[in-house]
Image 1 (spheres, helix red, strand yellow):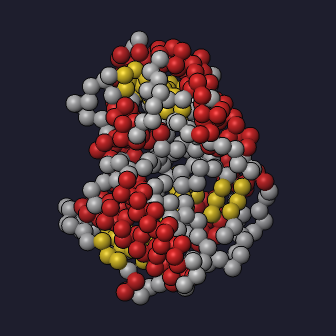
Image 2 (image 1 turned 180 degrees about the vertical axis):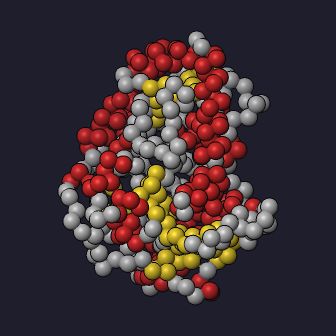
Image 3 (image 1 turned 120 degrees about the vertical axis):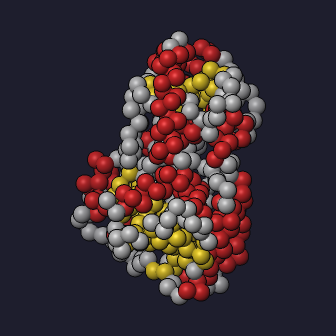
Length: 396
């Protein structure tokens, strides 16, 4: 499958590479998700064309939203194998029908960390392509009018809702069918092993309620910032080195100002221990404990993701209702996050400390920001609302 890094070259036409998207239309290959009526007739019929490989954790929030809308009766959801020999695991393929208008759309949802990377064959074959890390300035580099099909995909994070495990299990089984139908017996044992790993990721995702702040969650900390260092890989060494260096400098500045070695620091990995042992978290912090720390801290600090991607941290901070201090966002959203409303911006580590102090010394400002962030999360990020918004935009 051909991928594209826009700055590397201009693309004159859509490469085919002999790669086409097909799915089996026979009823027996589809796995229906039973929906309970929830306030009237369903608005959409959604068919998830499950590929033989998909990023179970990266797409977990979107899958949770699909499951929630199916359970409420807002959509009719079914699963079918995507018959394709080569697939990109960071892309979901969906066929959507608006039951009110009778219109249909083919839709992709993509979660690459890079703004300059597209799944071109998929983009050429769908009506709407939602991209999580989007820089619209790069769309003019796409061939023909393909850029007009690309829309911002919004924020996601690793989570699940009640019923997600069932839908996840169905997707794992359908992915295995997709492999068998596309590849036959070739690599079947390896495919089964990968699908079991997907099932583990789905089962281990934290419930959305554990990320969300409630009135009963007391504030017991000031600042939380836990981040990862990424080992350089071929082709993206410079970007990763810059991201890593910036994260270490911010950790050191925050530690010097506020302490909190169990809330501020680098996630403990062998690479981080080699690169910056003085900036490591005092101990290993589980995802569940980190979610609790976010909910009980006033401020969540955020730095640039790889290639300017949002990662999970922004969505997690919004769910926790934390005031956010962040480097300027390099990605575009369906509904923007506004400086001085949803976050305070900084460029240098010392400025990060200044912005944190500004929130600590101004409870009214911090309170307004926490309220704005919870409101944004509930309207645009909570899985079922996020998916509903995108389905609506697909037909706008």
